[in-house]
Image 1 (cartoon, rainbow, N blue to C red):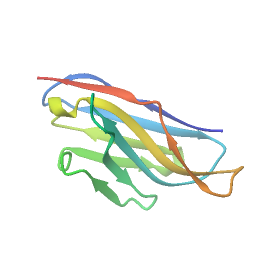
Image 2: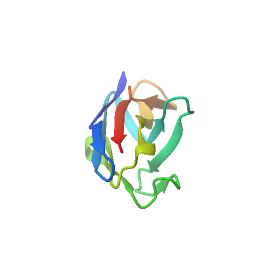
Image 3: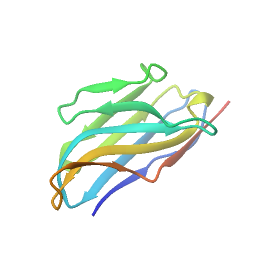
Image 4: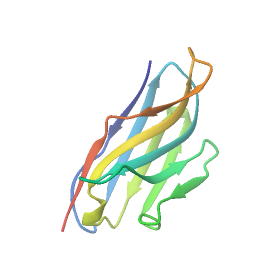
Amino acid sequence: QVQLVESGGGLVEAGGSLRLSCAASGSIYNIRTMGWYRQAPGKQRELAATITSGGNTDYADSVKGRFTISRDNAKNTVYLQMNSLKPEDTAVYYCNAQIKSLSYSLYGDYWGQGTQVTVSS
């Protein structure tokens, strides 16, 4: 069993900061790309940021310069530092990871349960 558990969401005023964390646990052999996606009410889920096992990052244009994704491979954890938050950043943020477990030969796509981020104006 592999699980992703997120933490760090909450309510913040516009211009404020939040840091999200997502820890992967269970029978993990290896993790490739990890990332954060978000889904605002009435909208489709969209990419916010991703990071490869080697540290290469990719960001949605809407968050570039404000969000920073990082990971600790020893802890199987990915972070999202969100600065200069705007009301339009309000969404449920989901952690995603490509994980090869000890019991399965292929990489699977795993998702966390989501954490709410609300930015007030």
